[in-house]
Image 1 (spheres, rainbow, N blue to C red):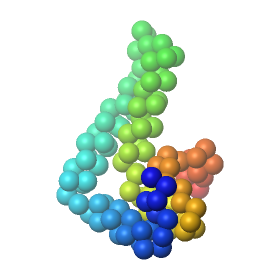
Image 2: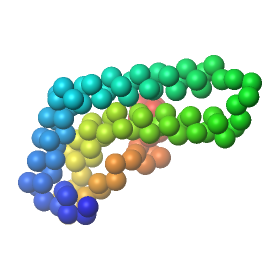
Image 3: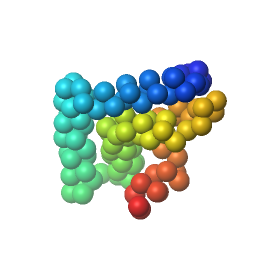
Image 4: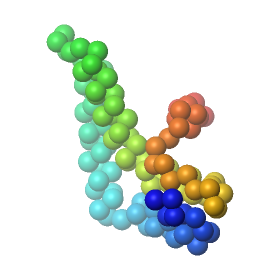
Length: 106
């Protein structure tokens, strides 16, 4: 995976591919599915039940984070590729703590 974005050409092709994905009808459908799942998980977290445990809540939070991360993956990758330096690619699809904080508190 280290060689996916190690040249300017590969970076540009990656950016173009992710931009194309954002407009693809299949991706749009997947976004709708993920948005629905995000809404369901958020509602479950907000309403809760008497039987739920802290572990149950943590599982729901992790699922919610994964759905959000997946939904935003093309945009995240575009941003990373546009700001990355060639030769030292960061193809980790997940946000760092600093990036997550920055996104949540613009």
